[in-house]
Image (cartoon, rainbow, N blue to C red; front, side, top):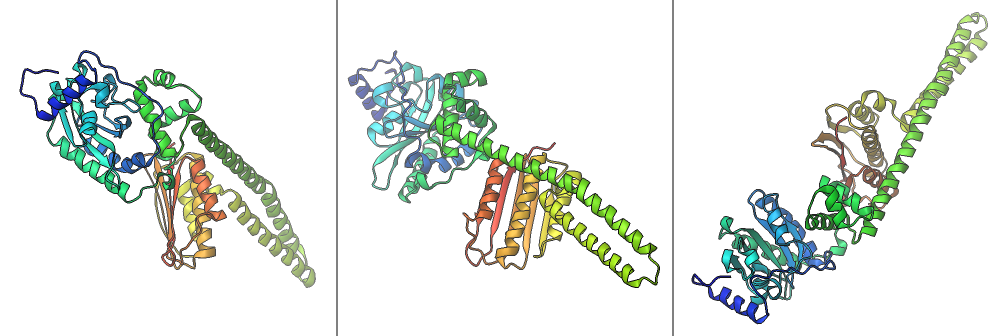
Length: 455
């Protein structure tokens, strides 16, 4: 705090409140409370707005923060350039930046005066904050009550007057979503695939019961950063505690083990059929044909009988091959996903418009999972859709495999039906997601995303 230059009236008034509160410029302590509402309407209404704003601010050296009505930070988006400075002043999730606690700052002052606030450099009451600048705007709910603040913070030398209009726009959009009645309990979790690599690593360590301090030490991150990552994980996976997180991860691992066991069993049965029963049927067929050829023309009835047996063995062999292909497609193991999917579409009773863009081979589990998802989706179309055509797309890129099966049928598919539930479970077991769109009378679309690094 300094009085060597003219001071704006709102800043001077804030300083006076700080003095009355017993604060001193040379003392700076930020209170931390771990028990804050990270699953309420404010957080969920703000999430997509903050995601978009963070993308727009990338590389600018500006941190984006969301606080509740008491100034407690509930979300933070910050790049590498500004993150250490925010950590240094403990401007991170869980910490309280109320004016009566840390002195004049945009968050606390916006709350105190119930209006937008800009505080730059030495306008801060606490000496520890004079190297920073910030602009904050209150967020109101449908009843006009202030329930939070959007704040933009940067180094004092990087301050731009346009930060305040930016904060106002974000606050206005969050307020609009609140007025529309965003209900966090009805928002779907986005799944494991939506996590970044760092968030996944944090999630695995936290699920083992490790504290934020231990996780921070192992990953060489600050504790506020780890807590920020962990809260994003909670929001994306729809959990509220490390116990629930551990349960979700274990359930996912159990699904993976189950699917792997089923797939291994399928492959073993297919191999046994191919190497055992099919080879035996081929041998018997050749033997019967040889016996038929050796029968004299005069024994026409015997010759005809042997020909019938040989034809019957050929039919059985064809049926066994179909069963074997359904259990585990040999073409997939031998030639890869693209030829296997092409073979699937050729056997579809509904005409298929196919697009495949997969360069090289993918991990075995991913290829097999993708094959069965497309196979089951095509079977569902043939059984229930009454469609004229199916559009199938299989594309891999940037570590993700995209599958899409769309028909022009009757729509109205039951998302909880056994077929679609099986598809969703297989996708989730591979760490992916499945989205169903099926309005009555407008066809059905099944879109799947699977993590798929090339071999």
